[in-house]
Image (cartoon, rainbow, N blue to C red; front, top):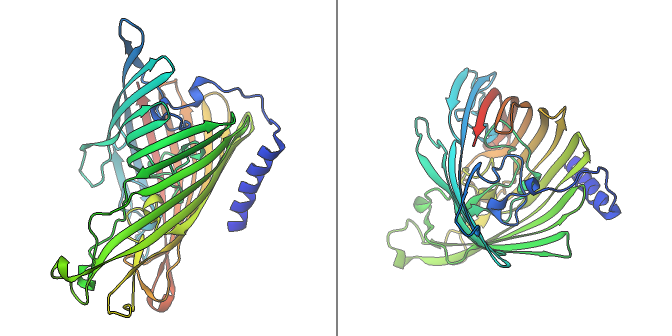
Length: 424
């Protein structure tokens, strides 16, 4: 499977080296997402609000928009107790009960203001979203709030380690389990150069999702350093290729035995790092291909299926020479590949496969037993109009876990989901 992903990425890179256009598709303003400054637009992003207002000078524009998003799903031959289809949450052994559910998650409201002062561009964006993190919870939560001034971005938005343009559209609100996905506070700078190249770097809010380790003599508090995320992208006539990087440094305090007082403990630091190679190619007017492969240690918070699994760092079984317990980054791998088919102007489908892998080390205690997860999706979307579409999708998930003595146990799940989405 890894050879398949490497072959897809190699084909993408080769096409750019040749510099030959396979289609006559031209760029337009709709190919870009102004909410993200220089970020490219994914098919699931919003673009400009439908209702825009301007002042009497014509230099300041204010817009409001919203998305009504309702999804229903039915689990059979294996169920997941969550509104998103996360293979990492599959019960082992397989839960053979049948689940029927509805959710308004991803229903959102946003406002955007932008102004052009000579050569300077200012964009301010705010979005609230019904994330429905728990059953019966329909609270609207702040998902994005940032200001972009020329090449600088400050606020809460998508991580610079992500590749939005390579994303595949799914009814499932999580998307591919092996996709890099993260939204948090950051300060970033984006530099376009040599016409088709872009370099971006950001200092981002660190997140480690560590469960309570105090019974083991380990504690995690405020972090002294941000995550550093970056990417370099080449965008040609038929698509793009992006190489992303991530550097992390986690601080924790450890004591000889159970932690009682912070002053009795000692502070340690452990690094994390990751690389991601991704891209999308418009092979023909009716077919586009995308893929991403990611690997590193201590980066599970950035992977869709692993972000809630508390496995960024694991606890070493043995103490150091002074008797302190220590943490170490957990190696993970993830990726996905997809093909999007445009049957006509109104109908399109996506075929998608994704995977994640957690590499447990014998000298380490993990706070999750997950070994691998796999994600299969096929769907059909009907665009009734520019603002209304419906979709139906079949999903299959597969999960393996570490059992006693490093043996494996397995389980699976199946889901059919459908959505009605109206945006304005």
